[in-house]
Length: 369
Ligand SMILES: [Fe+2]
Ligand SMILES: [Fe+2]
View (tube, rainbow, N blue to C red):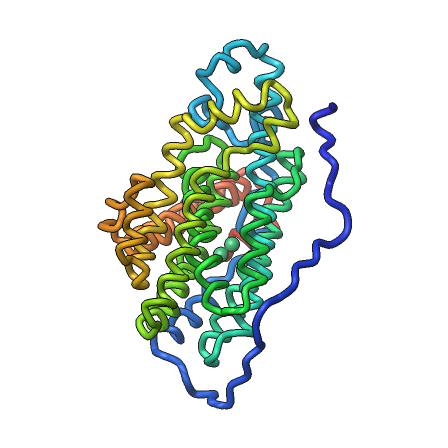
């Protein structure tokens, strides 16, 4: 099989939408916290077209600047057997598989946040949801551009991600969409994007993920805010259903994001590659980051009963309940601001040196931003 020409999924994927669209006639309702989130959502929109330096050329052999530590099979007997040219293919495909999942996941978030707008019972949550719809559209745009113009290897949505999206979009209970998207899949996003931001060498990949993460911090805050109150009112039986859903999703997130489809496509012995990926230090880091984002939120929204704790103990991640989730989100915001500040300073320096060389100020709206 020619590995660079993965068949694209054609046409649309139809998923039945569960639940009711709710209207409200109380246009003044909404907590101060929710309105504050809405207002931050409005103010912190950014334009991927302008904010990122798309003129940057990535290394075509290693578009993310992956160190071998992040090639999941590095160090395994399969990797040792591979000639250099094949290792290049693995690095490119790993980047392509990952960013394809980011792209499809962002489209899932776009669809789910539109559902949040429809199903939220109060106007402030609908306002907030509308800002998230725009955030997710910008994320889709940015990841699509990165994938198509820089990485140039694309994969269809993974079975695990597709299955999760189908469940949370189709469920008629509005809170399951919130729990599935704003807590579980956003947790997956936070873990994956923070690894990209902190551990890749390519500056475009780092900046893109840092800016996206800044928005995701608001999305998780919404999930926490909306679900904390609601789950405080549910019966023990209703809570148990939510815990079961969360527990099942935790297992999927832990076990099913090892690039199965990609290893089968590359054909270097898929089972051996999947097993090596599963044991890799990079996957361990991913899981640590994943559960350090998800577990504190589960605790915060009251999905932390004995059964849930038992699952988390079995996963070996119960200790993350002590992590301060809000603190991690604040850190995401701060890092994105720092990167933006540094980029702005670099662009200002470029403009002044062009002026000093007599080239005149560049026609660059971004530099003046
Ligand atoms: Fe997003
Ligand atoms: Fe999001």
